[in-house]
Picture 1: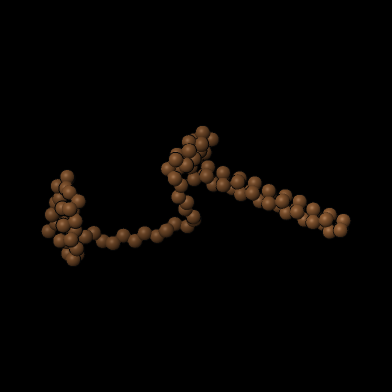
Picture 2: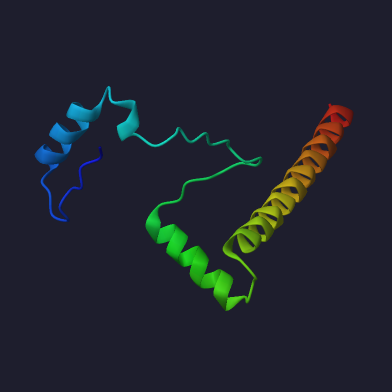
Length: 101
């Protein structure tokens, strides 16, 4: 038989109740199995998440996740273009230095 707990109960009382029912299978609900969804997750500090949510609404994106995905993709494109430009400049300068020596 399950005992009802009062609405305001101390942590100690909860601990005692859980310990008393630990080996009583009828006191517990069935196990819940959770699977991780595909895709990466990133943790952001609360202030960054709040700023991101603000700008997602400002840009009228349908969701924060969509806005973040777009912003990260734009940044990655910029980084790749910058890296390609840097490589092009370095290989061009090296070629000039080699021919002048």
